[in-house]
Length: 130
Image 1: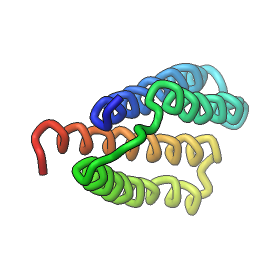
Image 2: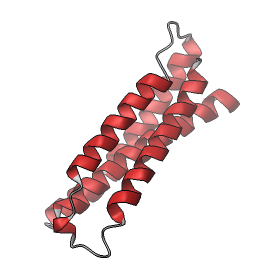
Image 3: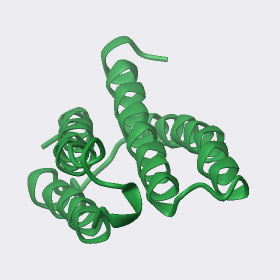
């Protein structure tokens, strides 16, 4: 499997696993106070599933060329910027003493958006160049 294929797998896993998690957990919001929603185990399972699925479906290649390394660096930098910007939201929620359900879920969403962005940047770099 080459690095572009790994980027596709990473992006799909980073998008699909959270969609399932949010569908399960957020479907309870209309009927249940958020302080009573058990989200910790589903969140931990979603994080673990993402890690395991990526490890199984997109193993590390034995060799990377200079282009792969540069694409990875650029994708990582953009992901870092996205993550840094988006973590302002859960930080603000914590300062406002909003229920920890929303803090944890917006932080998870920041991770998800960062991962999806990294994948998209890497795919575009492989397809169109820098």
